[in-house]
Amino acid sequence: MQFTIEHEREEDGRWLAEVPELPGVLAYGATADEAMAKAEVLALRVLAERLEHNEAGPHPISIGFAAA
Image (tube, rainbow, N blue to C red):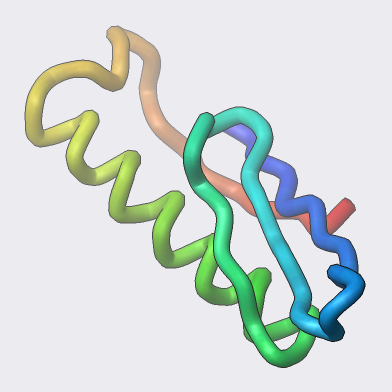
């Protein structure tokens, strides 16, 4: 699995980062790096939940993140 973290600056100055491949995985931060780190942590939590509940699918898992 390869995931992309997309980020952009909001009008109020905060940064928003999201992982499009995982609906609902988005996070705000004061900096782009902070927002991306929070989104990565949340994505890993979502993936851990899926594994725990056997929702990850039959494929071997190798996780990588790339900033867009």
